[in-house]
Image (cartoon, rainbow, N blue to C red; front, side, top):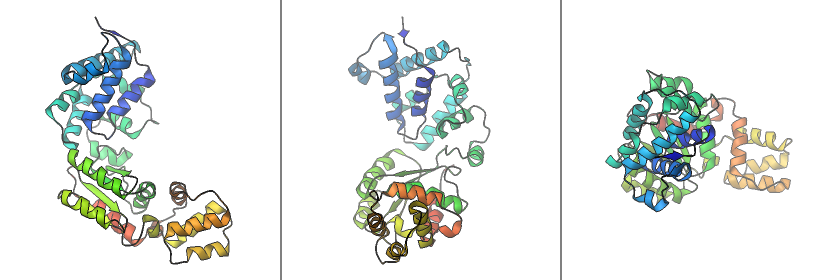
Length: 329
């Protein structure tokens, strides 16, 4: 006899959100299923060590039972239609390299038809996409129309947060929307982390990866190059960091916005032949302000973008390269 502590509506949404993020399917399904069983299955009770040794089929059945019973307790509709489950399965095995054991996790009978009734318009894009799986006859067309990002076709890895914040915005100014075209953008947090992240992703995904590196990352390029697949591409910046690609007028406009009345002396800093990050650090120091932070400044640059004139030639080149990587969709 199985006895459960039902998941709340909020807990169900969190679990489904975690199951539909762009992550290694085996890792995310095992984590969510084990969490649900550990926290919400009262009887029989399993230790973590027992779950770690449990066959994937049994694990799936237990998690499925807890989730579906929780749905029943909320009086959500019970519909024996597994179209969403099948579409999720097809997406995951197309996007990721999936083992036969992982396929067992993916071939679950979770009542997604009930769960999508509690997803609202303010939910994360992966949940909006999940809801769309129940009704769409054209998943790519709906993604392009509604900017759902999923199904994801390409990955872009950058070193820092500036690129993650601004590159999708520059692309929009060039009539290329990352979310509408299935581009998943993420920053690694440094050039060495880019190498590590590329190694990890290239082992598990079937889709192209675009790597963006600063000019001083030649060593990292050489570490990545042997593992590049035919579908992948690297772009090394021609000068310094991504901040060095920002047009001076855009920099000055952002500074005027952030600092209110920027002085002629501070504008002279901008005209110096120095790395842009160093210049910005000097301006903030001259003002006696808080420490210059790339992420905060990038957010203010984003607010001050006006037209494609704010997109430098190399940024346009990068966007063109991303656009032209062949995808499988």
